[in-house]
Amino acid sequence: MPSPIVHAVAGLALAKVLPLEEPKSHRQRLWKLPLFYGVFVAAAADLDFIPQLVLGGNFHRGLSHSLLFAIAFGAIAAWIASSWWKTSYRKLAIWSWVLYGSHLILDYFSAGRGIKFWLPFIDRFYKAPTTLFPGLHYSEGLWHSSHLPTLIFEFVLCAIVLGVVWGWQRGQVISNK
Image (cartoon, rainbow, N blue to C red):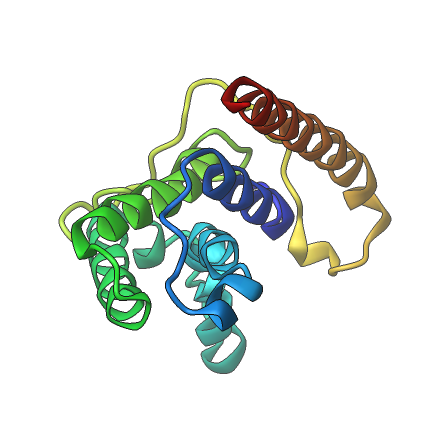
């Protein structure tokens, strides 16, 4: 599965490419809240490790990696953010579903068991026929040396994605002048 770094970079890239209107208050603009929101929502599905740490068991890639949860999380996050930012709920909900969906897509194309996309209706893992992301084996420990090739691959991929986004944005600024 991709590391949380890849999910965060995907959220950042999407937040830069599909920007929302700027928040109305200076403090919210100063903190770049749409970028933070993009990173948070894109990585949020992996917060399922918290109950796993507290309760034991295997929660990862369960309900939080399902379409139903993605819809519910996106709707609730958009409701909270739209009331705080005083912006369109509809636009923010669609944006949230795209961000959260990016997590599901990346995990679908990664090594491992797959994701339970249709949970709670169908309790089955779905996995792409092609693996684009090598797996991290957290059972080996968080800092195990076997993670190094995967992390190098992810670092290079993230650098390329952010470089493309930066170049695209730079082109947008130049074409608007």
